[in-house]
Length: 306
Picture 1 (cartoon, one colour):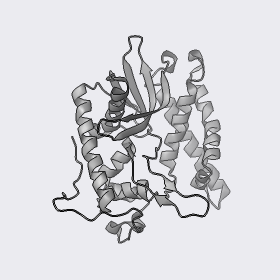
Picture 2 (cartoon, rainbow, N blue to C red):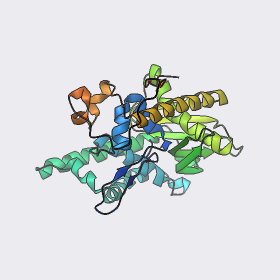
Picture 3 (spheres, rainbow, N blue to C red):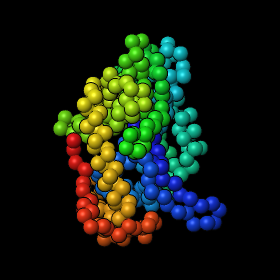
Picture 4 (cartoon, helix red, strand yellow):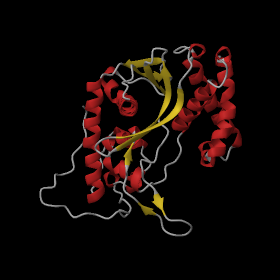
């Protein structure tokens, strides 16, 4: 899971002054995925910064990640399933303190019903944490890094950034990048898409340390599966070319203001249908200057699979 990064977009202005959007200056795996899914979604999230309601699934993922991170604060012999489950309530309290808007997740005029929903949700989080112990043995792990923020500037000038759940380093120096997923593992035909984020991280580590990670590992707590991939330099070079093409498409859309919506089955989970042309809505006024198209400018393309 990737904790959200701002991708270099800030809202200028203080006090009562109107905020001014600025063009994106970096790329993270999540925002790259947004653009590939739907360019207009990328605009809404990165440039317009439209608010989105918290979801139970995403918040549960954040909670589980926090518990797994904190478990490694304990000595190896104390990293047990009961201890991990006992961390859930406290980490939930800390999460609510940091993000007060999460209180609306279980808001209900019927206090009993709200309490029951919250109890079920916390139990589901505990079950995901407990399942992790069937997939990995934390008493035998000493992560080199947890929730590691990474950032690298490519020769092209593009800055890549993200947050890696866990980095393991063997005594021989081999690096393993691990990411926890609270959902279910994808079908084999969709495995490549699932690995995109991990290859993104591997590219950043390679560019930063000149070391190709030995293994990329996705741990799916929802289904109890572990997906691994051992990258080579050719893989990372392909990802870099793809990201450069993606960034060029983002740059052209930023300059032209032409952000094409792309309707998919994922639209049902989108918070922005009211302002999406695909659903009869009108996007808010574009907050950045628009450059008139020049002769020879190519039409905005679409990023596809490698």
